[in-house]
Length: 164
Image (cartoon, rainbow, N blue to C red; front, side, top):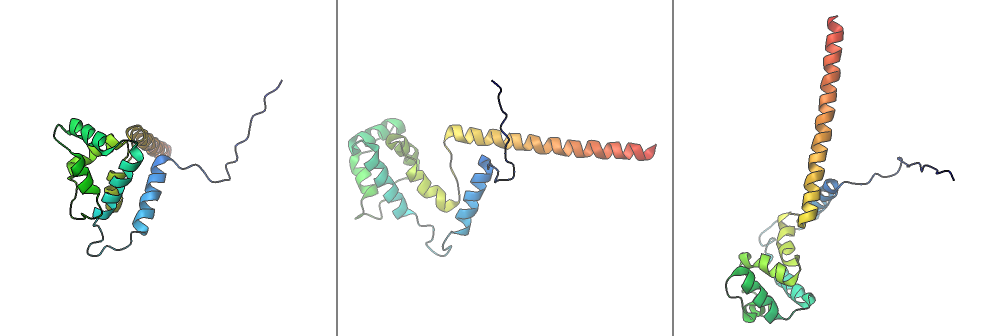
């Protein structure tokens, strides 16, 4: 049985690397940012909604989430606090920023932090994806450095040929 080698069609669209995709998303976000006027970055309601959704979809009750957060933070977080941070009727009650990592861990959702990242133009990646992106960045830097080295070697060769 002979094996046929498959030809790769290089005329079609090329696969984007992770950095290209992140850059494209950031450009899209920048292009469609609505208003940069007064109050345009008030994310209180977005954060409240994101926290409420995270609680609903976590499969845990508010007592469990508060308990896990208390353990992770080393200080008391109560169900009443969660209720006040997510209540539509209490728009002035905002969670302190330092509880958000514990909240995200307890609910297994990063939506609350994403509600803050997006308006700031930040794209967050989970640990393994961030490492993959960093590895890709180093690989691209290596390719550019090799390319620059080749150009200089060719230029040096040309200069030495002209001297002879």
